Amino acid sequence: MSDKRLLLGDEAVALGALHAGLSGVYAYPGTPSTEITEYIQQSPLARERGVRSRWCTNEKTAMEAALGMSYAGKRALVCMKHVGMNVCADAFINAAVTGVKGGLVVLAADDPSMHSSQNEQDSRFYGKFAMVPILEPSSQQEAFDMVAEAFCLSERFRLPVLMRLVTRLAHSRAAVSVGEPAPQNAFAPDDERTRWVLLPGNAKRQYASLIAQQPAIAGCAEDSPFNRLELSQAHSLGVVAAGIGYNYVREMLPAGVSVLKVSQYPVPARQVRELAAQCGRLLVVEDGQPFVEEQVRGLLGPEATVLGRLSGDLPRTGELTPDCVAAALGVSGARPFAKAEHLAPRPPQLCQGCGHRDVYAALNRVAAEFPGARIFGDIGCYTLGALPPFRAIDSCVDMGASITMAKGAADAGQRPAIAVIGDSTFTHSGMTGLLDAVNDHAAITVIISDNLTTAMTGGQDSAGTHKFEAICLALGVEREHLHVVEPLPKNLDEITRILREEIAYEGVSVIIPQRECMQTLARKLRQKKQAK
Image (cartoon, rainbow, N blue to C red; front, side, top):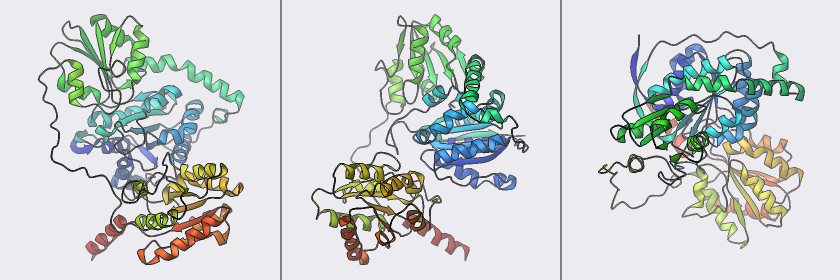
């Protein structure tokens, strides 16, 4: 028996995992992946089954915890946005060498066009690097169905499986047919101890085993129901459409054009060659980097005509659109998206009443007294301090980089060197940088702007809430150079005084402006009112 539900792509993945017998989801919030874990956290089925679903400190701890659950024989899901793959890469790559026991699926949500990200990284390269199966759904229904297949593939090959979404699929809705949930795996810890201990001797054997599995993994992709060669009339152009690119192609496809749909990797070489034998030119349509296009070029050799992002027939950057796909297909008369007119640009800004505003007001007042001051920022909603009206941040590179960049600049002679980092980002990847700074007695001032939540992604729990003073003291920050303040206009003079004093100190000082996010506070007040 099945029913239909209207689901986001993220929600389809979450429900698919629950119906596949999931026992734990491990994640750090990051757009466009956040809704997967949130859906599981709110699911009655997950509560009934005791599915573990708390947020992790970062993506590396999430990957390792999921590997531990897999070691115990149960099915685990790891969720993150594409840049999170960089954080968990060590554990992810080595998990392909240890292998898994219970099914382990790693969900990477990529963000072409950088809607809320600092790069357009394509996670499929990580799957190829690790030599594990990769799945990429083209629709919400396929996303739901694929998760169960991903767990089966993982247990069949005893490898983690990478599943890749893109923003447009993760955050759009469609009707999804849903069946009955499967049972969870029994608790059954692995007894093959040497497989999990990557001493060089064991690792060499495991790596050889991974290499030996590659033909079977490739054969599985060739025969996958998610890969489909749709041969049509003889036509000079054939299309290889990967993931969500298949939807754009089907919408704009001229009559008589053959299509190879690719949603499971490695790229099905036999089907690519069969399509090329019929068509003089191949167009590769994929959202992200030219991952498939490069492989198709390699398979067919320099004499083949392969079009796509590398050839300039599709834009080299940004996500796919119906317009650019229609142009690449040579479809004339396609109706382009109408451009909005007479709309003033509205850049994002910090919420009115936000504590970060008061932090930047104090920072700018003090920084103005030091013409050479540099303020190193980090990833979070407080990054908006780089924009008007504050223009307070001189850098923002990756999670946790504020403290370590400030330390490096201070080592080079920068005075003052100030780091601004949020509470969730600090526990994610700032603590080790602070330890480096303490150990080297670096002349930096660190501001941990604590709004008691992970605000940028919707108000998820922050791992270090109410623990930051203890953490900083444990890392070696001196008590007299650690301050907690309340960022309010009435306290501006006090905060600026503390900033001046600590900037003058030739060592590590930490200031923690602490006030709850206005959005989470408003949400709590609404819930309290509704409960009456």
